[in-house]
Structure formats: C-alpha cells, structure tokens
Length: 146
Image (cartoon, rainbow, N blue to C red; front, side):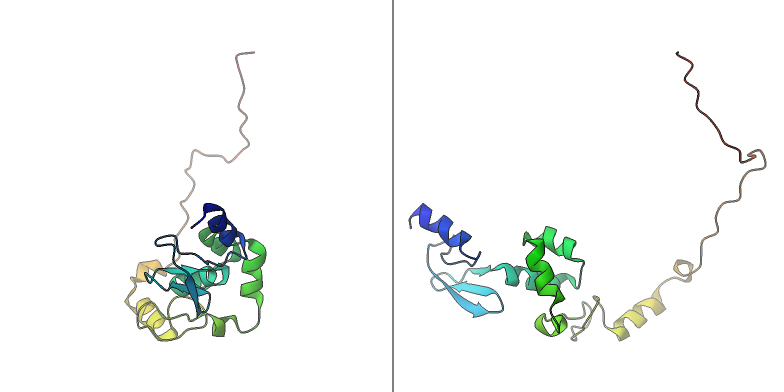
C-alpha cells in the first residue's frame, strides 16, 4: 500500500482502515474494535481505546485515561460524561468477574478483602511526640558568606 494513503487513513477520524501488519483492510466489529480480514489483527478507534482501558483498569479520572490511551481530553470527557456510561463499558470485578458499575471489585469481593486485611491497616497511626528539647520556635537560616 502507498505510505501516503496509510498516513491519511490514520488521520481520518483515527479509525483504522489498513492493517499495519499485512496491509489488509479492517472490518468494524463493534464497540470501537476493528478486525483485519486477512490476518485477524485487532485495532481500536478512540472510543475503543477508552473502552478497553476502562474495562481493564476500572473507572479512572479523565486525565489518567487521556494519558494512558493517547485520546484527546475532549473526546475522553465526552465518552465518560454521557449518561449510562457504566452500561456502555463492560466493567467486571477483578476477582469474580461479575458486572460492576464503579471501582474494580464488587461489593462482596471488597467486603471479603477488607475482612482478611490486617487490623493494623485500619487503625489510625499516632503522630510522633515532639522531643523535650524542641521548643517549637521559628528558625532562620543565615548565609554567613556575605
């Protein structure tokens, strides 16, 4: 394939058209995913990249998604701010695989993980007591080279 055509296809709404592995044509598979007809290579448009990131990593702030996927912040906000985002992205619990709307664990797996966590993790840490020699005043640094 012509290199100019390849670059043009990347710029065209960032939807993959020509496979980078075999120069075959991609076919839209749904949900931002494209599959090469010849070699089976999978590529994603901007929506597909955002969707894949959220399905694998759970919900994240838009700037994290933007940095990880390379999709513009405007598009990431548009994808994430639309109603029923959790219905558009298939988010699953990382332990049991059930569907979840937010986070990375379902409520039962999160409760089980909290039950097995050491008690020290939930106890507040005490701040160190000041030493008796420290009077707590203001200290100045003097430049003696002048």
